[in-house]
Image 1 (cartoon, rainbow, N blue to C red):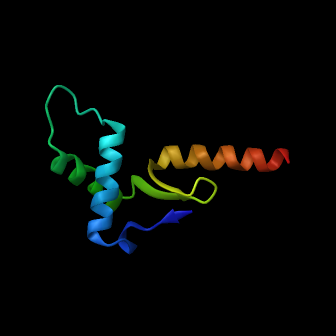
Image 2 (tube, one colour):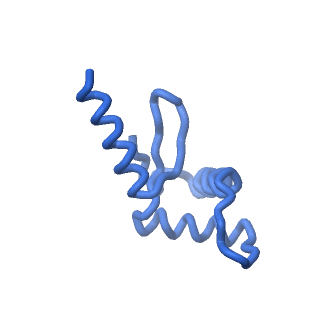
Length: 84
């Protein structure tokens, strides 16, 4: 299930993005990028629709996925359901 980023409180959204950035260890090349800048970068991607907030009912978890990752996941789920 997709969760529109606009429906989250600003603090909640920031904490979700922070957890994602810290967990993913996002690579920004040779430059050191501080946490606030990383959070801002991911927030901008959310605003532009490049990154989506996805809630998994089976795992009871929330994650951030790129549009491509989401499409791939949706294709996998559809294939599994077709096999049933």
